Image (cartoon, rainbow, N blue to C red; front, side, top):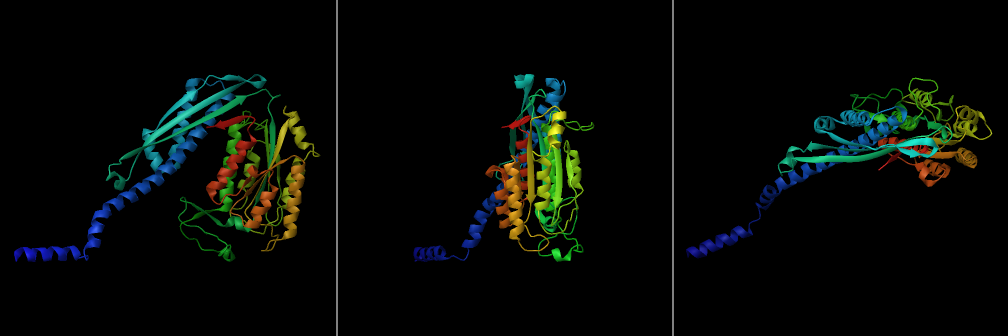
Length: 416
């Protein structure tokens, strides 16, 4: 009798499901928390890895370039490289700043080797690492720290003026109304700001500030051009910050457009004049889109028939030079209307053909552009590798950096 009652209650308990969810939750909750913690740490690790890689690459490049300019000892180069990595990491994030206390950098400064033209090649390799502390959720599972590491190598060379090649670069940049629209990047330096988009552009210039503040396309473009300028300067062994001319190899010009072109900055030695021009563009520009006049201005300045650039480079001792145009827009050709204009689109395509026929290398950047804009810039680019279509601020900066590295291959090379 007793056994029968015990057996019935046991079977009844086995059939009872009302508490299963609570039991499952109790068992799985710690695991779920741990997974969340690991996911957060994985994201942070990727971001910090990217930041460290960028810092190491920049430090290697800056150190190699500095060694070509001055009589820098190996010890000085080692100290410069380590200091550069530390300062770069201190600027990227609070997490990296905290970690910089245990940041270690090992530099490999190679003995200069001969290059063509009676010059020398300088190699700098850097390995950096630091320990990142994981969050409390990950630590609960025993994963308390992780090591972030990166390796970068740069090569710079000194050459005689007869073997160095100069370059003339012209920026053709969109400053239409859509360049006032936001990107994906939050501006943490501001509490709030007018966040313009296509849907609220009708409120310009009276849109009320909102939060968070997003960096808009024009500010992103200024940042991208700034990074491009820094890259060109770092790779230019003749660059001087406080002398005239600022370079004996690199000449840069710029022109902006909306549905009309604006006054241009003619090509000048170094990157500073073009950078100042771009920085002066309004943060919230207006207008439609027609690149034909601006693109034609750049073409006329660089084409072979115009001997201005040839004379400038010859007088500087670099009669051999390459010619480049960077054509960037975030839209399609509309003129002063809001609709695509096939005639304007065809005009731009014809100018692009003329540019390429004159052996000017044409890079194009379609920044968060619609399909017709992408189609136009794909057709205009000198080759598929010279076409970029970034959809984020980071992508835009990356595109301009890649172009700068490409056009300056003759003076300095960044390697992995």
